[in-house]
View 1 (cartoon, rainbow, N blue to C red):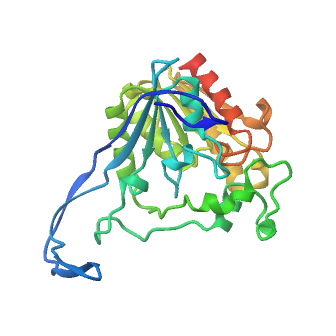
View 2: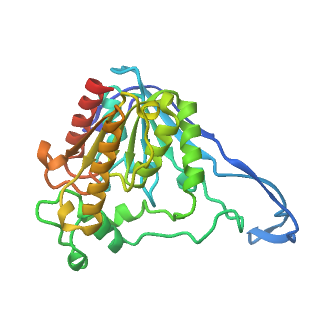
View 3: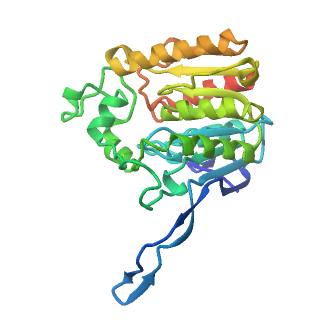
Length: 321
């Protein structure tokens, strides 16, 4: 089974692929009136909203290349307001990190976190607090460091910036609603996924850095290494037992000093690396511009040099994990 083609050439061959849902909890609903629902103009159905519902499950899709270079698989965890699509293809149509890592010979697992994508979200009142939040393109432009807020309408990015801003609308098609009150369910879900997958190297992005780092220290036997791609927050408590001698690679992009938010996030990342190293772990903070990748946005797995960054990350994993 051949993978993505480049100019008619297969870049990898799959031995296996598939998916599964895991985790979740049961919620009991009672006392609600039946409702008449019209599925189509010609078909109605009396729906009973009472009963037991499973919520907070998590979705994982796995891919196994025919020629594996590395026994330990990778697990990819997306950021806030996004799904596993983050890793599949870039907004301008190039193969994403999923395909780049498969081409390198890694087996890859891609997570849709709780209440995102194919994990689905819960529409039962009272199960999750708060309202869902949806990101605008303007917010993404600023938050992901594509350009200054004043230059959004003109579509003028930061000088030398490598994100394909001409495909901004296509990128926005990937945005999904998110809740800000579901972290506990997401920790549990990621942990369930890691235990089902087995030992792997975790690659986590943005909000996934906060969620993934906690899931990693709570499931240390399932972790062979962690690559944090601009984590927006990190787990506070680490111990020798939870980090051991596992390597942590914490990546930062460009233009960070132009953003107060990301300047603070950089300091938080440095502090987290210090906590890991202080208890005997091995954490390295690497700024991508300093290793040959200037112009990296927050979404550097989609930037113009994303394939080269994936190759660099793959080499680090083979050498350290």
